[in-house]
Image (cartoon, rainbow, N blue to C red; front, side, top):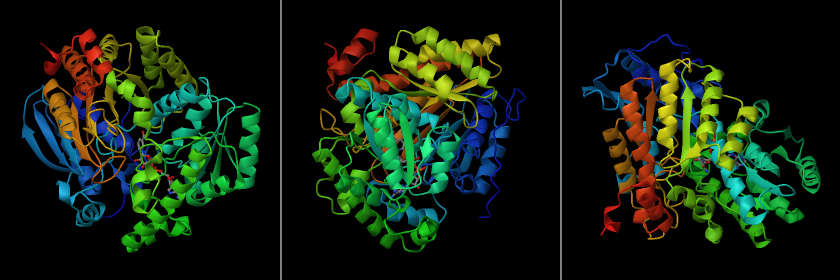
Amino acid sequence: MTKKAPGVRAARGTALTARGWQTEAALRMLHNNLDPEVAERPEDLVVYGGTGKAARDWASFDAITRCLTALADDETLLVQSGRPVGVLRTHEWAPRVLLANSNLVGDWATWPEFRRLEALGLTMYGQMTAGSWIYIGTQGILQGTYETFAAVAAKRFGDSLAGTLTVTAGLGGMGGAQPLAVTMNGGAVLVVECDPRRARRRLGTGYLDELAADLDDAVARVTEAKSARRALSVGVIGNAAEVLPELLRRGIEVDIVTDQTSAHDPLAYLPRGVAVDDWADYAAAKPDEFTDRARDSMAEHVDAMVGFLDAGAEVFDYGNSLRGEAKLGGCARAFDYPGFVPAYIRPLFCEGKGPFRWAALSGDPADIAATDRAVLELFGDNDTLARWIRLAGERVAFQGLPARICWLGYGERHLAGARFNDMVASGELAAPVVIGRDHLDAGSVASPYRETEGMADGSDAIADWPLLNALVNTASGATWVSIHHGGGVGMGRSIHAGQVCVADGTPLAAAKIERVLTNDPGMGVLRHADAGYDTAADVAAARGLRVPMREE
Ligand code: NAD
């Protein structure tokens, strides 16, 4: 397939290119995912997460664009791993698009089999929000990362990271949020990245403060910042599998260690001794050898993380399967440290809380500023949320269509959705708003190395929940709904679902939004109540959500 020059950009303003706002929204969000400001490798249709794509190939992209442009309000487009495969007559409450990405039957759900099928042109990797058209750039993960580091601060460091040093790696689409999330919490952070282009991109968008000349320079800058209790993020170019063991050997006092390289896909993790410029050709030519070398390097990387754990640091896996891959590479103690969900996030999931996000289809930052004010009016008594919205307004550079994220739970999201729809109807916003979420959410994912690690009842690998979630959102009136396999942790390790709805200011949109944004986070509460979490059962009881097995 010939590559296009990266020039895709979502339309802005109020002139429709599709027949209505519901389909216009899907069109703009697909295009926005591939905006060069948003996507990591738009020329290959890769949005983020190593290989997460928005469409299978350019011919599929063109065909999806054509279909969405002409789609009627009682039709539904079917997308199978990034390729449009049908347009069916449905009804106006049905989703306009149904997507299934990267799903393989259990025994076949391995990377080699996936790659074989991908090479035949039969599938693509959808990651979480790449193939479901609701990626909003690095901000999408920023608040979750900010919340996670805030939870680390609360657990170990007296509610602030001032005076602490964090060491991590990966300055990609998601990982690039780490330096800003740490400095927003007051800490110093050293981020190892092997690809200088990625590091420069984060500098350019203000997510990273400084790029050091070499490791000595980097260490000097962050240790000075730590002792001065100054917030500072410093990037260093190097391989994490070499730099972390070296930091340990030097006895640098590190307080927090994590990682966001693309470890979930061994071909997207650079083994030590391989030059960045040789990476793509080597991985394509000898995937098995590359995988073995990547896993060996990950084992050394994780050995060093366990070394920091032994030295007293707070160490956690940041949802990229690094522990699982390192174990395959021979690291016996890979699972000595926990994943971030059981360590910090599960109590939020019990309330149906997760990364709620929205984007302004007008392209006008003023629309997001207005929604920020609305969120502060609605939920201003939540201090962490209010602090986030204010900091985000000041410090987050938009990529592509202006967007915002904040964590809201059951009983909250539909209030925000209703308010946004009213603001569109009254003309307070220049154009409609899309409202979605990450798949990294309370009730829409089965992922034993991440969202469902260590569930109270042992139900980590039960994947009925994301399927129910997609069915519920389809039944409730979402504009597009997706079911994916793999996501952030890789083939064979997760099944997850997403939804997006469109606040176009109509009464119909208001009715759909009220149901979707109630039922979708409700699934998170139900999933955790069913697993035996009392907090979830209490939330359900207090907010009127029926849990049949807990009724008399
Ligand atoms: P990405 O591919 O855009 O970025 C990964 C970065 O790691 C790249 O810049 C790459 O150059 C760098 N890298 C690879 N090997 C390296 C090595 N050995 N040493 C140093 N740098 C190396 O991916 P992303 O979107 O930033 O996602 C990162 C990981 O986090 C993925 O595995 C993703 O699935 C996972 N993820 C986690 C969450 C979460 O909430 N915790 C959410 C989404 C994704």
